[in-house]
Length: 388
Image (cartoon, rainbow, N blue to C red; front, side, top):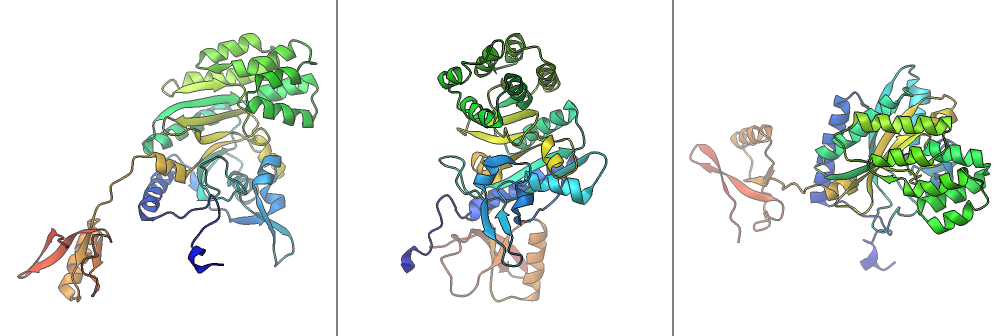
């Protein structure tokens, strides 16, 4: 390979340079501290797992997004995680083995075979929170509120949080007698909001189910969409229960910009109940995704109600207001005891102090220094750094 091109990275893979890395790390600490204040304990799953475990309960879409390779130690196929949530579900099911509620959070890199969008990274830094062990809507309310709090801490204006419910689609699909393969096709049509293709797809379905499928893309908007869905969808127990849960969410979270989208089925293979996506005015796509995924724990052999959310911390850091880094103080060389004492005092106050290694005059501003520590008589004082 040409030596001049050895610095190039694979497509949609990138470095974080100092300013962006500093922003990402500051947000990571802030958000994980906030999660901890709400009782969410930090876990750190491994980057690699056997694919049987990594893809359990996550469906075909996650399989396609996962890099796979052969483990030379065992000869078995392992995968580089494309999502941390199934790993956290495994930890809850088999390692913690708690009977009551467990609140867990995480932050780590994931790897995708292809970027999720035109400008997306194939190596998102996924941060999220998961709540296990409570099947009631109260858990969904807590998670949505925690998501809103996280975005507020990142100073990202939340335009809306779209809510939907996978249970409505599943109830209609089962009642219509669609096979698993047909449900996959219908899922793709609804996700694309392709109304003409939807009309063709359900042409042979008898009413009221046909009309219900066609109503799903129209049931979108503010809290009035709940009334529209109740009016146009069949009065089935599963649909009634789903709408009741969404009404409860709307009633309990009056301060959040909630909206409703009954055709948004992202995570169809993964989720089992309420689903949601948060949008910001600064981003064309969702900045956070979440919902209920009870079947993932069941796939690990221990059925546990579960709900949570995740977001790409790199994306969040780029949308958040950029913090202005405080300049560093340049300390003279050579060292002496009194200088070290002064430096320790400054660092204990939160200042960044670096030594002026010999032979680099004129380059310290590019290293981030804007002040210099100078001795005047017996006193150490801080002065503005002057460089030509």
